[in-house]
Structures are given as structure tokens and as C-alpha cells.
Image 1: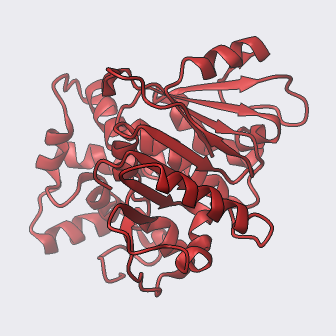
Image 2: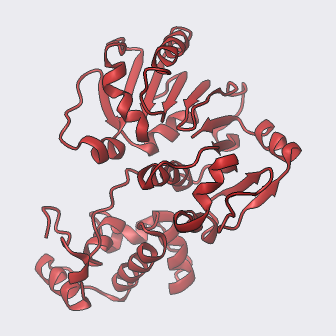
Length: 99
Length: 225
């Protein structure tokens, strides 16, 4: 892992690896957290970068039936930064954009 | 970048051909306003050393450098006063409040935008991003996309107008990054004029010359990327 806790080689990622990272962080990967991790992975594969927060919120409303989802919802899942943390558990590099 | 009257966006590569003219125009514009901000983004951060001598410690000018653009080019470089790091988010928040915005885009042309009309609110601030150049490399493509995503992240009223070689951003292997914009309805993408060399692989709205002129006329701020 790099100094930010992201896997150096994304090819090393598996769900087991994500679970182990979360266990070390004392974080439980509930269904919603797993949804965000998978969404971020899918988005990265399709578009070459992680999603904007507003995109993740929109997708959560669509995919999870969470009509009242907002950025607050995502921050409750990962208070240190939803997209960045989801990327870390998803085995992706630290988002480099300053958006 | 707090609330400058004037903002200059610089995304051009540094070159001896354009530097004197750019410095001259920038200096003139800064002198005409009570407060100014200069934001270096993308290849514009390569102007850093070139304009460092011209950059004054005048408290009325906020010299900002895009954090990510700088990290991609010289992670170890330490910014020296009067320059400081800033984000695209901060840039766009300032654009909404500025009275005048100029942009020196990667495509090489400068464009002075109209002043924000008196009484116009932030909510009615329609922003147009123009792209008329083909990206030289993957990084330039990415940073142009990030300019659009930065505006989309703030849910601004923003459109992107591609023309000429700018359509290369939407074709071939480069198109997938822009697909997220249309897949999630983040902003409107328009293409002006005939499509010949580069066939867009992203859902776009085509405009003739008159349609593009209307789009430009309706924008409060136009940024030439």
C-alpha cells in the first residue's frame, strides 16, 4: 500500500482484501458501503476516473431506492471522504483531481 | 480566491511567442480592476516560472495555481509567494462573482467575456466552455474534461461547445471520459459546424452557426479552454 493506504497494484484487489482493509480500520462494510465501493469500481472501469459526488448520490437514489440520499448520506458511510475512501476500499488509486 | 472583480484563467503552454503579449494584456486588465485573481490550470501551470517575475506581491492580485495540475507536473516543487494552491471548485465559485473573466485557452486564443450584468444573480449565471483544440496528449484531454466536471460538480448552469479540432476530445479512445457527462446528465454538450474528421462517440447536440451564436449570446461567461 502507498502512504495513503491505497493498493499499489489495483490488480491485487479482491473483496477479501477490501474486507481485511476495513477490518483493520474497524469499519463494517455494510450493504450501502459495498454498493458505493462497487459503483466506484464500475465507474472507474467505464470512464477512467471515479465519479463526482453528485453522480454517486444520483446513482444511489436510482439503485438503492434511497430517494432522500444526499452527500450527507455518503459522508455518513465514509466520513473521511466518501469517494476517496470508496476508492481505497475498491483498490483504486487515490483520486487525483481537485474537484 | 475570494471575490475578485477580475479573473484570468490561463491554460496555455508557456512559449516565447505568446508570453510578452499575455503579460501585457494581463497587466492591463489587472490595473483596471480593484481586485483580481489569476488561475493557472493544466498546461498553464508551466507559465509559473515564466510569469513569476511579472507576478507582483500586490495584495489586490490573488495568484492561484491548480493543485492537481501542479502535482502532475512537478510534485516536489514548492510554490513561492505570491503564488498559492487553489482548486477548481474555488475557481468556479469566484467566477460566479467576478465582473470580468478572461481566458487564455490551450487552443491559443484569448477571449474577454462580458461583464456580469448588473443585478444578475449567481443562479442565472450561464456559463459556456468552448473547446476548439485537439488534445496534445492524454493529460491535456483529462484536464479539459476536469474543467467541465468542476463546473458540473457545483451544479452550475453550464454548457460545453466543441468545434473544429476540439471534436477530437469526443472521438476514439478519448471519448469514454466525456460519456459520464451525458450518461448522468451533468451538463449539455454541443457541437458547432460540420462533423468531418472526428465523429463524436458521445451524445451531443449539433448546432449550426446561428445556433452556436445564440448559445454564446445567452452565456454570461465564456471560458475558452
